[in-house]
Image 1: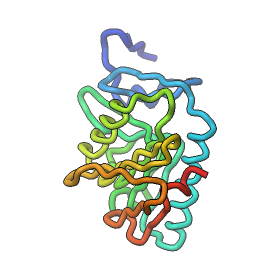
Image 2: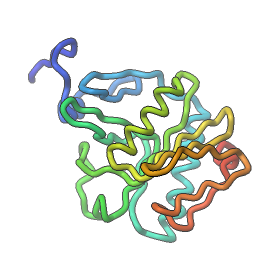
Image 3: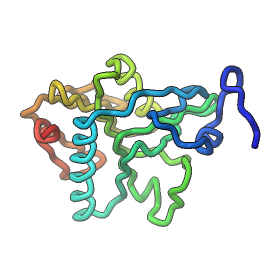
Length: 186
C-alpha cells in the first residue's frame, strides 16, 4: 500500500475514501484532512428529524433519495475537497435509481442540510454553505439548534434567515415540502 505524506502531498478524494475510519469526524479540505469532534446529541436529533421528514416526503413523491450520515460530496478538485453534509438530497435526475452508491461519485446533491455545532465557527459554516452552492448544490440549509433558526443559501439569492415560527419551504428542489423551523429542533 502506498504511503501518503500528509505534510507535503495533498490527498485526492479517492485516497481519502480508502483511509481507515476514524473516531473523529473528518473532511478533506483542499487535499488536507480536517478533523472535528463528534457532534453532540442535539445535533444528532436535528439530523434524524430532517432525515425523517425528508423520507416521509419522498415516500409520497419518489423523485430522488436522501442520504444521511455525512455521506461524502466532492465539492472541489485539484486539490480535492470532500465535505460530509449532515443530510443531502439527490434527485433521480442527478443520481439515478440504479447508480452505484459506493465511494464518492461526481454527482452533486440538489439540497444539503448542515447542523451548526458549538465547536463550529460561523464564518466557516457560512463559507461551507457557499462552497456547496458554488459546487452546484441548489439549496444549502444551515440549521442553528441554539437559536432555533434556519439559514438558507441559494446561488442567485441573498441568504435568508428563518426564525422558529417561520416555515421552511424548498420549492425549487422539493415542491410542497414544508416544515416549521422551530419544530425541527424538538
